[in-house]
Structures are given as structure tokens and as C-alpha cells.
Image 1: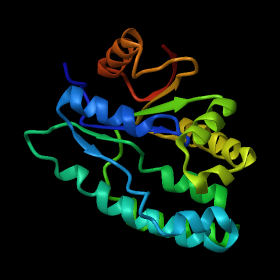
Image 2 (image 1 turned 120 degrees about the horizontal axis):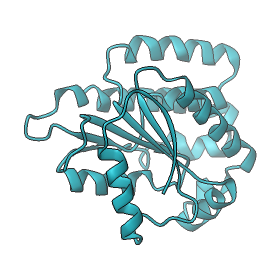
Image 3 (image 1 turned 30 degrees about the horizontal axis):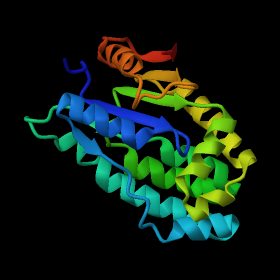
Length: 211
């Protein structure tokens, strides 16, 4: 069974499992995947070493990259009517709000509005919510040297901004899913419950769920 939505986005903090879940859902539904390309971004390690100096360049680079990817979502093949992304269109706003000073943030928002105004929005957005201790543990487990410098205060600010952004979305079905203590890769019953949750018809709004 496929979901009654053509464009689904999976969101969450670093290490939440967005990409792994997006790939699995896409395979489940024979859907197109839209995966964020961040590993080759030269500004990312520079940002974590010197956030104030490199934040604007980093956010602009992601803005451009996401724009080119997401504009193709509206051109999906008839043979793959569902697209699953491991990030949402609003991710740029969330991160820019946490990293940029007011003057650069205002300019960034103008550019965002110009570039993203005509792009499709997710019909269903799934946010994987984890407590901060688990997020930190997963970052350590990923072993990426530049990520080890990320402070808990910054992560907490991102999570707060994410939740605020999600609650303000209009015309989108938002599921904020508590996945603490749940391994969606190994727990087949939990994964089955998640599929049923995503494949059910919903009206736009914010839903707080637990598996």
C-alpha cells in the first residue's frame, strides 16, 4: 500500500536516522528518493571550526543545493508518483535562524522567499524527535570528526526552532514522532506501526505520535 501523498519529507536533528528511514520508505513504496548532499560541502567542516565566519556561506550553499534538488520533485515520473526526501524545504530557514546574525538572516530570508516560493511543499512531514542525550550519543557514534565539536546548546536551539517552525506550517500534515527507545531498523512491529501511520489519510495539521 502506498501513502495518499505524493511528497513526503523526513526531518530531525543530526543522527536522528532521517536518511536511513527515507531510503527504507522509498524502497517500501517504490518511490523516488531526494537525499541531501552534504558530505562534499567544503563549507561544513569550516563552519564547525569557525561558525561566525563561515555560517552565511554554508547556508547559501545549502540553499542553492536544496533548490536544485527540490525543483525536480514537481517533475516526478508517472512511474514513481511518490517522492521521499530526508529533509524538508524549511530546513534552510531553521538552520539560518540559528546560525546567522540579524542582518544576514534578513537577507537570507529574502533570498529564500524568492527561490523557494514556487517549489512544492511536502504534503506530509515526519519529524523524528529524540532527547538531547540520545542525539549526542548518536553523533559520537557516527565518528565524523567535525561533528564532534557541535555543542549541546546549539543542538537544543535547533530542536526548539524546528518544533516552532513545524507548528507554524500551514497546509501540511506534520507528524512529530517520539522515537526514543525505538529502533526502526530492528523492531519490525514498530516499523509496521509507522507505515500504517504514514499511509493513513490525514487532514493538514500537527500530530504528536509515539510508536
